[in-house]
Every structure is written in C-alpha cells, then in structure tokens.
View 1 (spheres, rainbow, N blue to C red):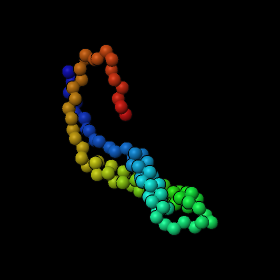
View 2 (view 1 turned 135 degrees about the vertical axis):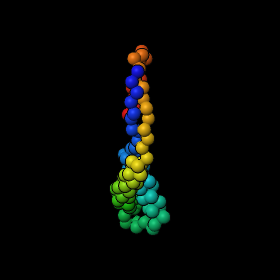
View 3 (view 1 turned 30 degrees about the horizontal axis):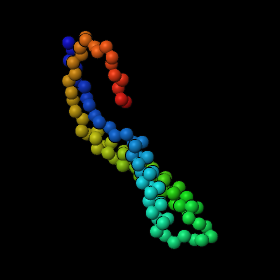
View 4 (view 1 turned 180 degrees about the vertical axis):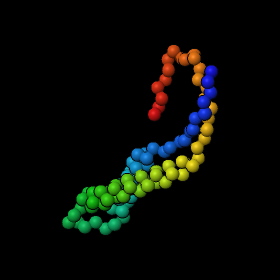
Length: 98
C-alpha cells in the first residue's frame, strides 16, 4: 500500500455568498420602501422595484466581496493529510459531493 501526502483546503462557495447578499439586498429594499413615504402618483410596487433593482445588485456585489475575503483568509490555513491507497474497493462507490 502506498502512502501519499495531500494538501487540504476548505474553500467557500462564492455563489452562495452572492445569492445571500442579493436576498439581503431585496429585504433591505423592502424595509426602505415600507419605512419611507410613498408618492401616491407612483405607488408602492414601482418604488419597491426601483429600490429592489439597485439593492439586488449592490447585495450581489457585496456578498461576492465577502466571499472573496473569506476565501483569501482560508488560503493561508491549509492542512496536510496522509492518504493510503488500497487495492480493495467497495462494490458500490459513492460519487463525490463536489
């Protein structure tokens, strides 16, 4: 049996941060729309749509930046593990979750 050293690094999924940031942005737009006075000539939904478009984009970008910052921080924390290759394999191998 051969033994090999491998480097392990856990990386966050940037898309998860971006989607979460966009969702938080839309929620913030809803809060701003409800808390501010609404022009009766325009209405609630167009005002929410206007704020929502900008808040969605801003949340998307800020969430991505948070994900990149966390990824940069985790690059310095790597681990080394030793794996052993065996000849006996399971009859039903699971697919990796990546």
